[in-house]
Amino acid sequence: MTEQQKYMKAALRLAQKAAEEGEVPVGAVVVCEGKIVGRGRNRRETKKNALHHAEIEAIEKACRKLGGWRLHKCDLYVTLEPCPMCAGAIINARIKTVYYGAPDPKAGSCGTLVDLFALPYNHRPTVVSGVMEEACAAILRDFFRALREKRRRLRFQEKSDVADV
Image (cartoon, rainbow, N blue to C red; front, side, top):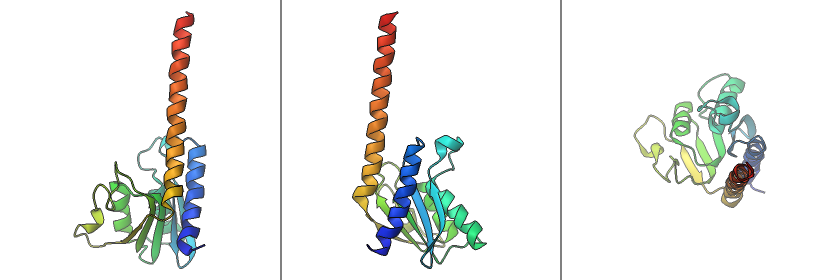
């Protein structure tokens, strides 16, 4: 197993935990000198807060653990391509390299929809895409497939309840 796979598997475990909590399954880890120093998973629904993305949580924990906001020696592994908010946090934290699994055609800001890292900001992280892409995409596909099925069953149940009245 490569080092990239090792850390992406850690992020996937966090994504699975998010899915079990009813959250969109995205997980992230911040790695510094071979050690995970920050972990995060989506918690927007649980926390009722748009800011609770996996990357933001992982960056916040890494800053706390390392005692500063400059994470220039750190890499971020995330199961889904970061959105604009998270890309901004990555730039501001000075993350060295971003490794992501699945591209995000709706909000991907590391090259899929837009590349915020290509703009002339004061920091430009390196991006490595497609790390364990199939596993990262599969957890998202499975989650949304199950969510659609649950909604279909609820609609069917509501129609049945109305017909019984």
